[in-house]
Amino acid sequence: MENATAVGKNALQYRLIMNEVVGFTITIALTVLIGITLYLLKLKGAIFIDTATFIVVFILQFALLYFFSFMQYKNLKYTIGQNAVSFQRGTFTIERETIPFEKIKSSLFDQSFFQRLFSVGDITIEQEDEKYIWEDIDSMTANLISNAVSAKGDVQPITVATANAAVNSQPPATNL
Image (cartoon, rainbow, N blue to C red):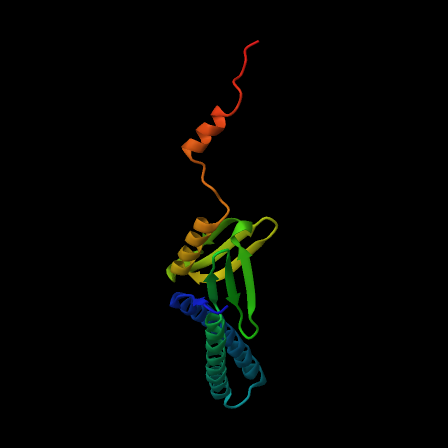
């Protein structure tokens, strides 16, 4: 994807916060479990050990999840070409998907409550026989892609002139 465009920063912010909330929850659960175990073992310095464990695990999970979130964001790119739209995503391995406009039947931008807070959402592109979902993309990128799909897609609007021409081209009904 030579001329690929990166998605907006909202996608990074959303990924960071969601990943860190999950990581913090796991850190709390792990240190509570360790604290209970140390209390039951009646070890001296249990509070110090549990506090140190919390700090070390928190720093490690924060750094690792920040790195993974940044790598996911760095690899989120798209290209809108003449005949197709291409998506790229991944953390360490990169997955690319190219969807020809002629095969696109519909596109949908969906947002959960939390995604709306960060102006991100999921793009779903339906083809004849499958769906492609690109998750946690900023709203501006989603609008650009949706507009391109609508403009270049295989969906043709029905105009009044076309509808009248179709009605006039049918033979008149005869009364028997």
